[in-house]
Length: 393
Ligand SMILES: *Cc1c(COP(=O)(O)O)cnc(C)c1O
Figure 1: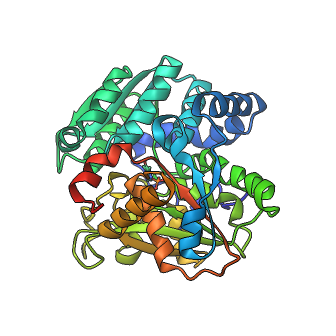
Figure 2 (figure 1 turned 180 degrees about the vertical axis):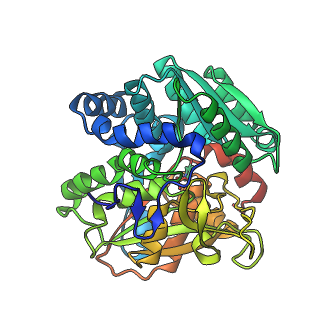
Figure 3 (figure 1 turned 120 degrees about the vertical axis):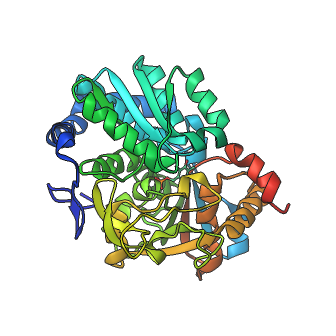
């Protein structure tokens, strides 16, 4: 196994399941069943078939020649942006809805911030004909109207979370409350490698198809299975977990995680968790999070909604703590510039999240022969307004 997790869900000293007692039956059912389900032959067949015919996998591994010339190395882009719904998130929602069906669940709930995970969840619920309720902060609903409408068009019910700051964490609380009250017929689809065990491990396994494909594609295109670098952005950390998975045990592969430093590390408007945070419990697991002296979660900020999260998944806390991965950060401006650079050099407009990974190319010192894989987690269509408003092109 490529991210060794013990049966209580720990990666080193991070992970576990810190949950209210009322949630115990739901989590325990999932914990005792998930491995047997997802490792089953029938499940794997269904999962692989949907990834191929519905999502459009394998996603290409594209040699970006003009970008490579600029940074004087060999840069490949893993094109998760070409997936159905435009990002990697659907790999996980397909996996989880199949798990939900195996568990005999009839309804799905999810929480969403910017709406991307909500859309990926509503999509697979439509595909499977399952009832879908997505909790979303009232403030986020106003900010992200197109995604709210997309979810409704896909047949989901979007319920506003009206307490607290009326954003992601409040939506998460509402979703958990719903789940506690409907434990038997409902599955809760979490959208990243966060939450109580077994979610981080389960989501990582579904996303690990990314590095599984990279290995085979590099072998075919480069005659070698291992790159020198793998670079991915980290919000909760699911696209990075998937891109790193099959390389973790090969110490010669440098893993580079890129967080969002927003308006700057010391600006007070940032989401660079490892640079600014300390250990603590967030959303059911022991991890690293941005918090005040007395342990209140600090409101994160990033230009890209997908990176606007105050913590990271526990496996990333462990990768950071153990030094296995290098953690860098990119500001809003650096990400915008990197996104515009890729658009002009390669004809690919990246999601602003993915643009943070591209911005790290500026901070690394490559050798001519280095093979570098950047995980392009999503496409930039959703960010066009931000590019127009804030970009300088
Ligand atoms: C949601 C999202 C992310 C951040 O989520 P991770 O779990 O860290 O991968 C990154 N890129 C895109 C395009 C997203 O939609």
